[in-house]
Image 1 (cartoon, protein in one colour):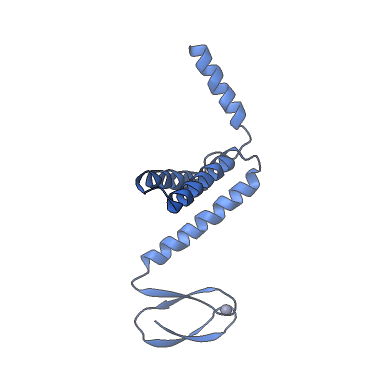
Image 2 (cartoon, helix red, strand yellow; image 1 turned 120 degrees about the vertical axis):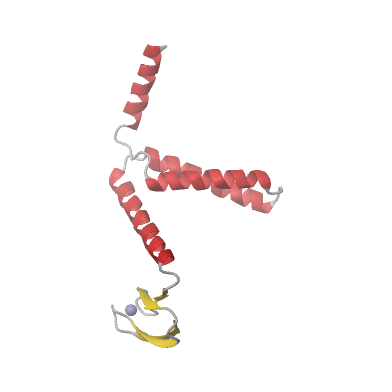
Length: 135
Ligand SMILES: [Zn+2]
């Protein structure tokens, strides 16, 4: 039994060698897949259940695809981009009471302005386009 287990661990280890493994994006896709799967158990049969179930399966497959992928450089880059977006979202959420975020209509850069100043003219820091918004 002990030999069988250590043999199995060795086989799994050599199978996972050179693969991306369990990164944040894989973890979050797996959690989202499980949450959707649980939701599917509570909603009545119909189009929503089919759609939720399909999304849940897609996320599950995507998660395993990431874990088992051998193209580590691409997966690491995707994970890095994902973590960057999550950090931007967190920063915006923390500043939601003091600042507003607008996208420049020309170059699509995100701009942060203080809240509660009435109607203001925003100048884009990147392309100097001016546009009016309520802050
Ligand atoms: Zn701009």
